Length: 345
Image (cartoon, rainbow, N blue to C red; front, side):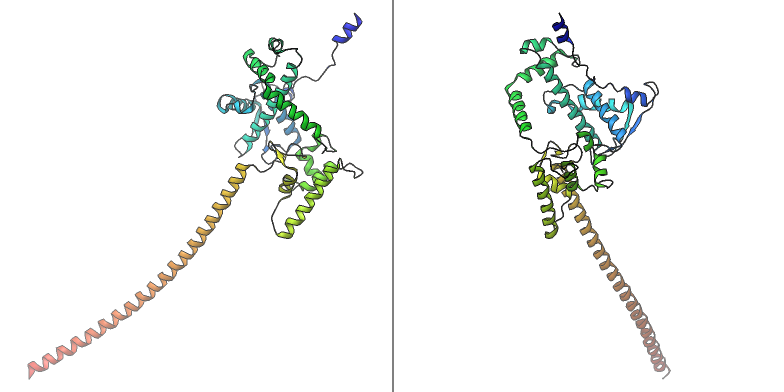
């Protein structure tokens, strides 16, 4: 009896976030107030630590209660699934959605939360001996039985199992460890580490700070080699006159995966293909506008020169006409005088 009682006792764990902290900060659900949230598209979340925490918590609540858990993110429909989530976010938060890039940041966070939710459901699925038993034990956070059964079939598929095994093998190979916990790698902390503000954080020095301990020992030989390669590339680009930001060099050395730079946690994002294309189009447009402005100035100079020439010619013509008129009058008078003399004679 004792052994059975002990075996049934589970360690008490922290439950899922319910958004009560946000409600308390707003003075209750009936207050009608909203927390102002300023999301920075450059780092994918608010810079303010309190805003960032509440924003992340609310995204988790919405992803769990409103967003259906897909087998793959590409199955999510923007109109029927994502837009209701964004509208739900705006019930208690005034997010600066009008700023370019913010809506995509919210979608990215929903995507991350959806992936975490799918992981937790997979952990629940693995508790059961077989597929049929798992389907009969739908977790409380999934409201639709059919959706749960589809997820169970996906968890049992060779595609999912192969991908899970590959992910597990990749995690075992990971040897480039940070010396700081994840929460201290927030964007705000990154700025404080470098002693800088805004977007001027030196990402190369940040990498060194987050991969060395207080005694100056590197977390791994790979991390040290990566940092040395970053410094080498930075000096090489400077000597060759090639403009490269620290973030671009870090991305070049570490690579990137699924919208984040490896080794630097959540925050700085590598330039995407679409962003690079837009940047190129913007530069091309600027070049065309500059060329058009130069042509316009040249055209204006030509028009001004021609206008001056026309004025000068008009003045010369006026003088010539005056001269011709004066000469014509003299000839007429002489002719009349000769006629009078002839008649008198």
